[in-house]
Length: 142
Image 1 (cartoon, rainbow, N blue to C red):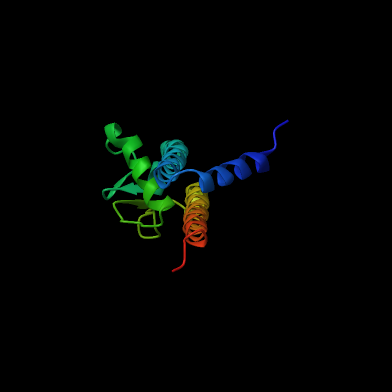
Image 2: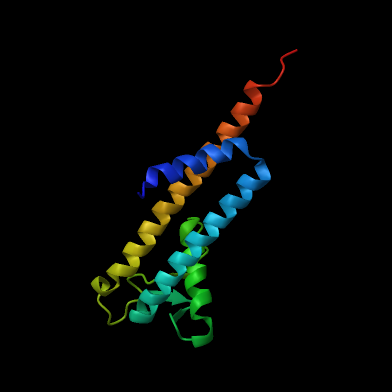
């Protein structure tokens, strides 16, 4: 029987008993999986509505060879909430003749991804903080 709470509990429990390198690499792997997943979803959304994503001052897909890399760039900058500005969702000045309501799906995807990124960053910080506290609680006091 699938019980999602059990898998998350086992993972968090595992992070307290394994070394920092393994925990860091697992964080990196989860981060990469999230970014690739949202990158693929944004690729589909960008192909459906190319005027809703701006990459290097052009509509999404202006360079067909860079579609996935543009979607991935939007994904990781959104997930980390860095937002460098090289790839972004279209703003009111970018729309031209396009109605903003047409881009609702792209805006929603980016909002969900940014929220997931904040939750992920908080989870990583909490786990690392817990590991450090656990180590300090076992330290000998002189």
